Image (tube, rainbow, N blue to C red):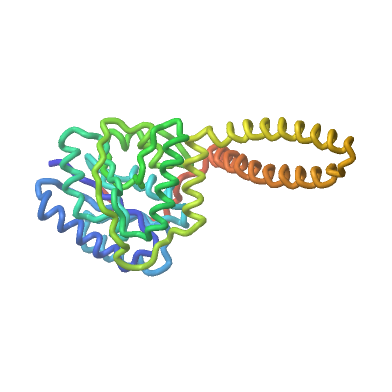
Length: 309
């Protein structure tokens, strides 16, 4: 009998962990009764009682497992680490807030049974704020355009992964994994399944400007060379224009026009602002390299439950 693993990352989801486990169990009983399964919740140091709910779930059903992180290791490391702790023939990764509907599980498994090794759940529609959706679309198109690897638009990592691809992930040894980019770069026998992203069932989102910016910069610095090369091209262009502008100011100055002072002030302001912006972007690349060189562990576990076997 084939075994399906469900990997559910969570952080302060006390209202959702029990309904999510029940929803997955219901899908398995109704549509996939011929499969064995396990549900792994990896908790990223919740503070709202989520861990108490998970311990109760694990005590009542040995097929439900839990890993408690010693602290919050971020939105990328924790799910990536969780994927590698599963034991099924395939792994379904889903968010705990029901924005990824459990009802799409049978469709993911059906594509896997056709021979696909990766089944990407792609958000073709969303019930989120329309302006936020618009900004996400611009971001995906920008990364898609400038990336060396063809990125998957509106793919957040939700989907199904065959055991063979999980073994590939285990061999990466990447201390700063970006799952969306890894799937686009290394994924094989891949198919996309469209779905409509639902509203969060309960609780509030943990995404904010910082987390969204972090995701954007991680994808840009890992999979694009354009910003760095644009900085070089822009610097050369501005340098040439500055030389021409200096010559023009000198000519007008010789004709009796006092333009040197204003020209110098404008030039200094332009160079200062451009330099700060470009140094910040270059710093993002350096931070990315620093993270990889430091080679920190993805996650430090505080506790794991129902892994005795």
